[in-house]
Image (tube, rainbow, N blue to C red):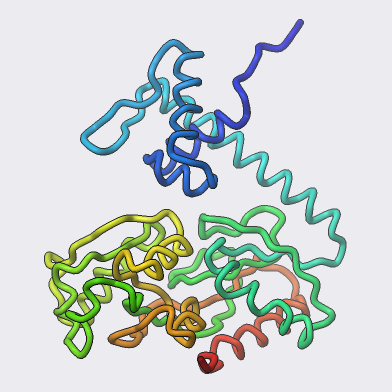
Length: 299
């Protein structure tokens, strides 16, 4: 008996991302597609089903009953595919160390240091697994992340360095003159860019600097920190970011940090499953600790 036909994988992937993020815009950013492409994929599914998957609620999206069922099914299916694929890749890489981290950390901190790492740790071969959720995924030997306790009981956590965050802005930002030489309260009414992955960053920083959260004027929200910082560098607003991820931009003058950086309760950490010691991870952690503590590069 022939199996029932399924819709295209791309359409299901677009729907799953839009349903999980509750935003077509954020789904498009995650999948590196246009807003229109994701919308067309979702409409194609709705037409094939003959019923809607989303309903509009103000400026947001709400799943219908059918949409919720399909979200659960696609989410579970893609999670299983990801785990199986990661396990197969790991089996194929032999003695390679599989390191998970967010795409932003990978692009802005890890990749610029790969050549230097290869010189210091020639015996450590890395395979990278970009991931969005702060969870150790199947097939990964370790995960590099920015987070804070309590950590899951089944993790072994190596603290690498303190997290420090601060507002950053481009010299091209039209409102820069109103910020230079002023206290943090000058941010009141300015266009603040933010990211869904760290919604608490601005409120926490504001509380530490005597700025009322009611005075925070949020502008665009971005799915990834990488996009957030590119928007800030383009002069679209003021972003907030960890110091190490913008060090080179500050050194080159591409971004400015008017109030420096403030330590948070979080830290950079290398997380692994609780299992036997791995000399490669110990060496990698030591190298990362030194890199995170190193001063910013000269401009």
